Image 1 (cartoon, rainbow, N blue to C red):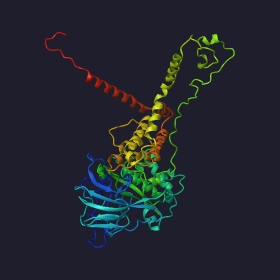
Image 2 (cartoon, one colour; image 1 turned 120 degrees about the vertical axis):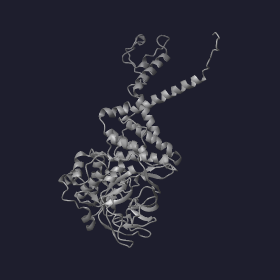
Image 3 (cartoon, rainbow, N blue to C red; image 1 turned 90 degrees about the vertical axis):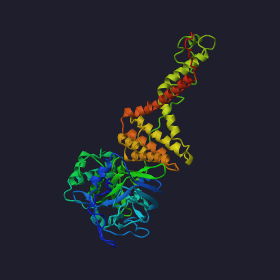
Image 4 (tube, rainbow, N blue to C red; image 1 turned 30 degrees about the vertical axis):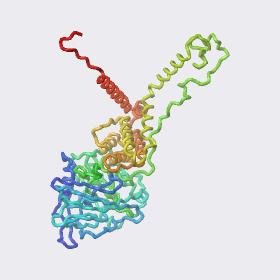
Length: 562
């Protein structure tokens, strides 16, 4: 979105118009080209440095502008009236009811000295802004735009915003939208191919309400539809480009957001596209770094009583909104029962007797056929000693247990990593890292070898992609990765609740996506047990090095006979 020349959008003008009074209009065009350019830059330059009091920065999207008009060629901002920036608190967002939970969040944003953007990046919805310079306010999109050449270059500004937390029930029970919203935000051009609406109906078949339809669309794009994220594609963003995207199933955030918004409109759901930045990367000083490659676009759908609501159809980008996830997650990975001490592999504790078995027969090789090993123990000095029998029994048990050793080791390791201990603030780092290790090892057991060179965020995206995880499992993987980044980079690491359940949901998703053979191997011969060999090899190398260091070196003096 933000171009190297400073523009997220290629503006048709120089920003706001209408002088210094209270009125005026703004307009802008398609961000497709500049957004793609930014995602493909060789160097991910920092655009914004963000400090926020938001509890979970994985949901910290920074919105610049909304694209609410689709003319068949592209999505773009409609011409909107602008006013002076409101003093104090901004008006309540359109459609947001008083019964929806919300928390006001303070965020400070500093723009890079080279980043000259006409539109102000902010969390949505803003409830107040403190900024110097000439800025105007667009009420419908709740955006700020620079007036008379004003831009973001080197500015630091403060934003108060609302972290809106609707429930799935509130969204599912939303009433019909106001007539003006429905009229303006469900328009589609006549040039839109019928395949778009037809596909929307097919994907959302069985949905009980518009919210269910929206979630089905999101999950189809992000997880189940077979789409691939690719910033190199050139399919365009107009009506024909949307149809081609549905056919080829390759594109980047512009194509996913444009297409989902068009499909939502075809179902009668008011929709628009937001352009801005996906959540950035947490830093050691507690800030969040937002770079060029975080440039992003996502759809916003309107639900009466909640207002404009974010969805995330782009695979492996941003975060899936919590209100689109099931509140009762699926089953976790079934536990493997440990071998019972009373199983048939163990000797019977009560020897059977037989009246037809004489003492002489007991001394013969094999004893009596109907008796257990204990029944043939010698009573005199003849035959093997008791300790020899015990040695043979232990050897037999070892032979039986050896094939189960990898499984038993994984069970023990999993229990230790996911144990109930270590949940306080002092244990936030070791517990979170142990949970992350368990997640990556579980993925390895199912065939996804770890890549230690990747960040937790990229490693999580790789697991989701290669494991073809559903929305619930994918969200769990990303939550664990976000928790890892938080404890590694936050000034005061905090424990994150529910990580153990997240790992179990992720494991269930990985298990569901593989065949029976892979599932059995993951349980009986887990690939991650190779770590035992690595540890043993490292230990032995250390022993050898210490031994060599202690061994005296005898050198013969020159010309001396040995």
